[in-house]
Amino acid sequence: MTLYQELNERGLVYQSTDSKVLDALLEREKVCMYLGFDPTASSLHVGSLVQLYMLAHFARRGHRAIALFGTGTAHVGDPSGKNTPRPMLESDVLMDNAKKIQIQADVLFERLGVHVEYVDNFSWFKNLKYLDVLRDIGPHFSVSRMLSFDTYKRRLNTGLTFLEFNYQLLQSYDYLHLHKTYGCTLQVGGADQWANIIAGVDIIRRKTEQTVHALTVPLVTLSNGVKMGKTEQGAIYLDAQRTSPFDFYQYWRNLTDVDARRFIYIFSFWDFEKIENMLIDINSAKMQLARSVTALVHGKEIAESVSKAAKSVTHSSTIHQALPTIKVEKKLFEKDDSVISFIRATNVLKSTSEIRRLIDQRGVKIDGVLASSYDQRVNINATTILLQLGKKRAYTIRLM
Image: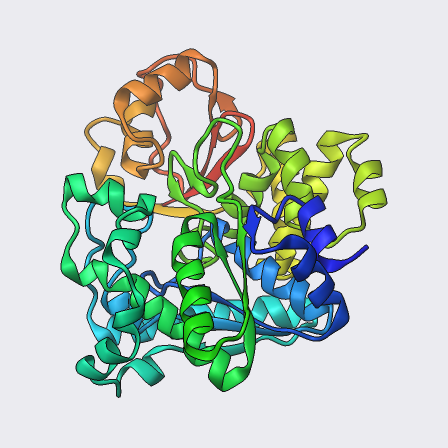
């Protein structure tokens, strides 16, 4: 099976330039490809894993894979998929973010045993002169064509700044620069980046008379339409300080059957025959997927530890060291030691009504004891308390 065919079968191809030509090219020669990351946060999230897996797929097949950190373009902000301008971050914050997400990517690629190169577009944008860029590539961009793209059409009604309007030119310049400097002939990105990538393909054709390619990955959403990695508690990050390994594992473990059947192809390198056999027992398949992705991000030992912790809170009232720990000051509920006051102090649920609803549904346990009423008392003299919410969420509450 060719690389393009495998990516397509795994659900990793949304759109591409001539698929037959690209498929043949990837089999005929070793291609230099790149994929960009926007360093607007200090950690990648679950949705970013799709891009990391894509880079690894190309590297595993012997292609030259480059991860581009868009510190330079982040100074402008990509309007794609946004209704309002992105918050503008200072240069030092963007640089620091890029360093942190590179460390995350490094660990992942090392565990996969693949080599991926890194570049940062600030290294060439910082020395460019505005007039030179405008004269060099500006004449090749049609404003009317740019406004025909959905990204810009949607924003015209809510306000599109001139700064953001420059983003497509800068991303196109990235492709042109990487094509001339590294010989890149393929840019990969999310489905919402198609217009920007095609603009780069076009500028290279106009400037060099050479043909390069584009490939986009679907924006992965859950079966309920929610963007992957978003939960009631917020985004699921790769950084263990922002999302505990236990919660990370549980995110994958708690996938619906429908989502698990799709994601096991996207977020693994298992061959299709093995996956088909795994899916005979969907519950077991979810656990294997959860352990695999958690091991990739946090390491095998941690993955095994949180897997055991997840089983222990399901079948017992034992506190496990791998459970996420929340520190709570006792004084917050000294005057009211009811279960509602206690849970409110932990901030794991958003509102009192949500706490009441979960108690009504017999979904709250304190140290293994079912909370049967709103005013049930909690032993605030304890040092640690096991809080279980539903069947698959558990926390060690450390009282200070």
